[in-house]
Image (tube, rainbow, N blue to C red; front, top):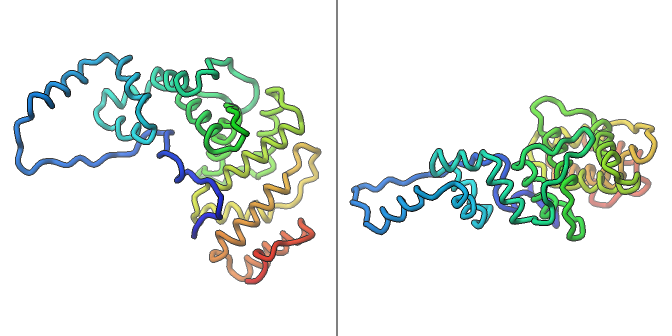
Length: 265
């Protein structure tokens, strides 16, 4: 199965930055050769550098290399586990963000490492017209983690309500909270791995009953339409005939007109 055209996925971006656990393969020489004085000297020089200089070097390298760098030795791994590197990376990449105060609501900011991941999501995954909104990034991480829990995640209405409460508690208007929540849902759905678990999750969301909740807590029809679209296109081969007609009946009960790509088993 392939992702729908135009859908942004994690594969289009540098490797995962949260957490850094990608191992690297080391190759041993068949015949050991004594290291040259230049190589030996450079290795010793890097080993003698203080942590703050190592951090300045690391944050200037591409993010795609950080996973490999963190696996070179234990000391470098500890640097990537600490707060200092991530605080420096935030200050260098998004200098206008600064060290903002904590905000109210059910979704916390977390460590500097998580803040970096949230800012990266806001800048690269969710289209915000060039703006950087750390809260949107944290909301994305929260929702994606909830949907990827090993146990059955909460109903979509509860997750949606939590997201709306978070945006409103941080001063967003009801209309803006509904708009941002829809963008977060779309981004998360588009970035879920295409596997049997995601198929079951989307099918459950499609078959969930309508909840008569006041705006902005009502579910977005744009998001619901995307759920059906992925089921009828990306996961079409996973639908049995009974599944197809069950999901199609749910779609007909929610939308007056159905796209032609949804029709025909």
